[in-house]
Length: 425
Image (cartoon, rainbow, N blue to C red; front, side):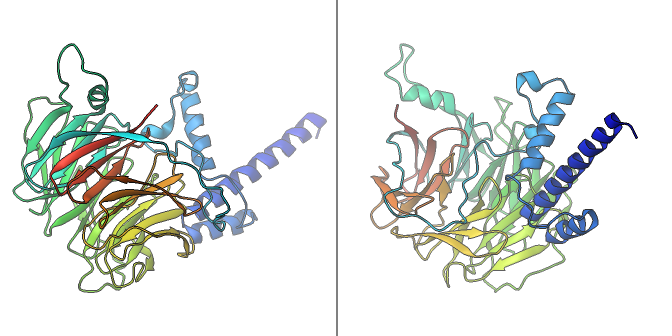
């Protein structure tokens, strides 16, 4: 073998080792432990090999973009497999409380609109261009964020800006949750009337859904798979309902965890790659599910004691889950071990089915204090409370939803109003 072939063999060997390491780390970090162990054993790769979060996905996205000739335009695979927009925060280390908390920037707020009954939920589109709100009055309002921002400017020459661009009336009972298709112009809603409805937001005159899934239970929560081909419904049933949106076929897990009679699902959310999903239940449990097999892979029972768990969402790197409950706590859990790594205290939450949210960089956690009617912000890393603001609602807000792309969020109130909050420059 000549020297050039020898050098190439060495380079190929290093490449194969790197690829094997990335595959093992990807499987392990996505909680696919058996698969990670099998690949590690077959390739003689250490199971505890270190790799940056989502490194394999990042390289694949760039490779596909380069193959399509799109690399100069910055196009990537994220249209079909979303990747974190910012570097992941490592919450596995102990919190440092010695003056290291960050300051949360000041925000201005504006009343946007009112429903005819309680504003129960909200959701931003993946690109942050739209936000929708759902109400107990059975209506859904669709807002264009660029028009909301115009409202925050001094009065325009053309008169007041109307940010509501669509209003849908097609449910017969209160709206519980909303979600946008990750790539398309589709908005879905889940409601107490046991239906999931599909609205095409590109059609300006459409007032009603063009497709309907009839479930067998009150649909409490909905979440699109990142591919857009499947959706999850959390209902009064203790097991998430997985739907193929092309056939409407419903799948249920064959691996049913032990649940209580009060195990209705308050919230279900996919991780950013769809490899896992998480549920928060009325029985106080947080449960993690495999996104491919639909099996429950971890149950954190009594995550919020005997109180309801009202929300659960993944961090962008899928390593942690943020939950809140009616025990007045917000908690951060490690996905791989199920251990509690952070707890955020100091906000009373015992009545409303609200959710705790990250800001778009995951440096802060935003929540509601029902007793003081304030919006409370913690430094996510140190757990220190760094701000609290009057909600400007009459009565505590029922829902908070943060933009995925900028420093802005929505609050929905029991006073029927919808407010927009944006960082001041």
